[in-house]
Every structure is written in C-alpha cells, then in structure tokens.
Length: 204
Length: 208
Image 1: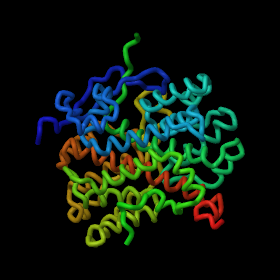
Image 2: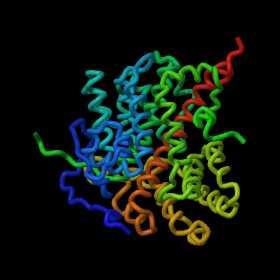
Image 3: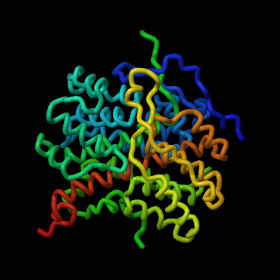
Image 4: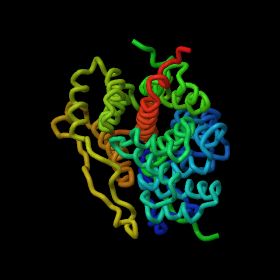
C-alpha cells in the first residue's frame, strides 16, 4: 500500500463538545491530496482555487469529478435565491439537519450563516442549545420539522410537513428549496463526520 | 430499458414528468439539478472506475437504498446487478438485517452526552461474508454506520476499511457514494411527496 494509505490520529485536546456558532477547524483522518501535486483536473474538482488550502477539499479532491459535481450542486441550492426561499431559511434547514445528525462542524458553519442572513442570533443559538425541538416561531419551526423528518431514516417526511410549510406561507418552489437544502446536508454531514473531526480554534 | 445516461434519475425516481409544474420548479435550480445528475453519473458511470469496481458501487448503493426502506430506489440499483443473483440474494438478506431507525450514536463526551442514543452496530453475517467477500462486507458495515449513526464515525472505521483492502482514494469515493445516496433518496422522497400533494396535475404533464 502507498504511504498515504494510513489513518491520521490527532491528539485533539480542543475537540468541541457542544454546538457553537464559533468558527471551528477540521482535522482529516486520511491524507489529503498533496497541494504541490494538484493538476488542472484537481483544480476543476475544487471549483474555487482557494479551496486548495483546505484539508477537507484536498481530501475530497482524490475523486475530482465527484467533488466538482457535489460543489456545484451545493452552490446552486444555497446561493441561487432567485424566486425562492430566502438564504437565511436555507441555512436554517442546513443547521437543523446538522444539529439532528450530530455534525458539530457543519452546524457551526451554517448556524453562522443563518444568523448572518436572518439577524436572529438568539433563535439560532436556541436551536443549537436546545436541539431541534426548540420553539423558534411557526415559520422556522415548520422548516426545522420538515428538515428533521427528511433526515430521519427511514425518511419520515410526509404530506403533513408540506401542509405545515404551506400554512406558514411557503409556496411550492420554496418548499423545493427546503427539500433541496435539507437533503443536501444529509450528504455534507456524512462526509464531514466520517472523514475527520472538528477542533476549536485558538481565540484570536 | 431506459437509458441511465439520458434521463434525470431524481426526476425519474420521483415521478416528475416533463412539462409538469415540479419540472418547471426544478428547472429554476438548473445547476443543482444538472450536477445532482452529474454526481450520479460520476459515481456510477465514471470514465475510470479507479479503485472501486462498478459491481461494488451498485452493491453498496442497493444496500444503502434498501436500508432506507425505499423499494423503488433500491430496485433501481439492484437492477444493475441483474447478472449476479447470488450477490443480490445476499444483499437482500443483509438489508433485512440492517434495517433500523436513525440517526443515533454518541456525541463527544460532555454536555451533549445526555443526547447519546444507542442502536444496532451492524455487522455482516459471518456466513454471508464468504459470498460478499471481506472487502465488500467492510464497505457495507461502513455504509450502515454512515446512514444510521454518522456521529459514531471515528478513525477506527477508516482503519477497518484500509485493513479490508480499500485505498485512501477508494474510501473517499465510497464515502461520497453513500453520502450522495443519502441526499438522492431524500430528494426523491421529498419531491415525490410534494408531487402527490399537488395532485396528478403537478407531477404529470399539463394538457392545456
């Protein structure tokens, strides 16, 4: 086997033990692809060249074509807000999914985004502190409930979740944005949780 | 038989017909739709299968869809193994053994430990390992961990895959495959449920 085929064990004394909106680091359990050996095929997979600095993306770039398609799926689901659900509520779906699945790293990133776009830091923090049962008001509750039902295995999402999303004002296109955002984080959570671990960054 | 290359798999499995209102809504997120399809193609019909054989990819996919208890999605992947009846029978038996409810697992020791929940630690039946092979058996065990208790993931799970003969590159591809399927099956169920709530007019083509 090649040298790179071994597990990296970290002496991670700063592993976060609660959900947080603070910025976290991430430590890979397998060797990321060496930055110096990246080719144009890898850069196409990274989509943004700056991601060559990230251990997470340089690990995923070992399968560049899949990473490229994954990244472009992600960007459109979250950044393309034309005719659809506000960004804040897509991030809420991502944060709720991450809270339910238990991805402390993903929850940190997307709770920060949810706060940035909604200006509702305290509500977002209650989702992190109390979990997916926190009362965040009817509209956010409906989005969190739908996300949790989608994250469950077997999938528990049913017409009652659609009805509740409609009652709080979402149209069909916005409901599709909830389905996309929540579904996508079942992809992202599993990669972040299973290929490495989060670490608390030193206070700046 | 339909061509997997030319058809959008999520639309196909969710029953979204061209010209339906859900088709129109999906078209507003064209890059996401096209790249979900590209993700499927690069995982299941790549130019180069690299360190994960086609048969291994379909077997893991059939298992993942099967334990999600989504028969139409599972049948789609099982159909790709049509010439491997012994393997398919073994997978179906393992799917039954692997079915449970998730997510469960442990958080890092601390305040979140009160939320720890236990559940099935799935292992392939010893006598079925001879049919599946140790390598595929290890992949199924890891897939089960990813599907049901992703927060239990640890370096030891990576080591188990390396010990079974999976390379680092292969582990990345396998992880993407299982994680992608977790997305795909949820997109299908979500869209299918929305389509059903709209009545027949939404998921099938408008007539006028």
